[in-house]
Image 1 (cartoon, one colour):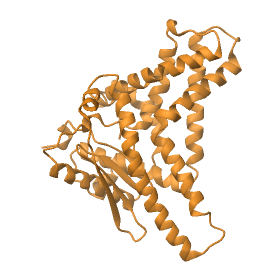
Image 2 (cartoon, helix red, strand yellow):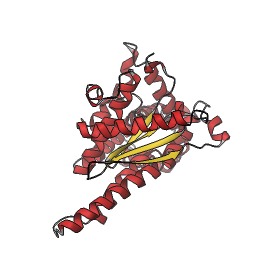
Image 3 (cartoon, helix red, strand yellow):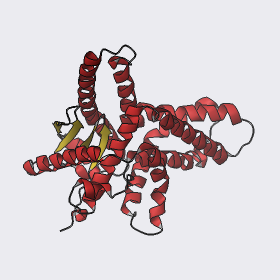
Image 4 (cartoon, helix red, strand yellow):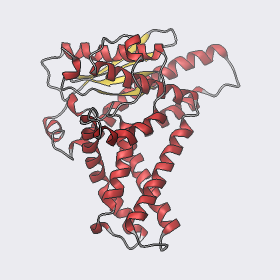
Length: 326
């Protein structure tokens, strides 16, 4: 029986030198150590009944899932960061090279990028919502009265800032490797969804892009925001009113975008409707890179460890159907 028929939509995220996958009952991270071994970190998925109920409510489930994944994902990011720092510290102590960047500074940079990535729909999303609106108001206020055009320009500024940010951080070798692990994560999920045995050879033949990725969600929040802000009831007379409307509607934009993401994923095999997910896939061309066989091996190890743990906890309730993204 093909695994592609399973209702479980597994999600995951890249971490420093590894991959985390969210299962039905457990989240598992696997990271590659310098001695070529693979270290694991597992945390149970324990949810309060009211949280599980909210994850079934359309438009609310997106917000709940994002907050939940941010909180749980931080544990796994910390594990990967600590593992990386420990190994880098040992290497630096052995090398005693004064021209190298200090481990502390390097780790601070990596943690900063990683945390912003996970919390981009909370603090980061707020910044990427308010700054473009403020810039558009300063540059174009009073030049024309077409609200939709104002919102369209605001969305364009938001995309330029987002792409510029990604291109900037992608210049560092460690972030390039993070994006490779992101690609490995997508490939493993796609191979599993297609029912293929999870071998490096099988996984590598798939694309690094996936419709259910958080990168796709970011693009959708921009597009949904343009349309929502342009409704006649959301007019403004000052920049402060405009920013206030953006803050007020942020949960609504997130909720709607999550539902659109689920829809684009459900119709990805329909010839015409599949193009609805293309804007998100285009952004993934920046946030994913082709992984090496070693990186794919780590992603497979993480996914298989997660599946094994799920089978061992089969009697426990889970809610993997609400995975935020691939």
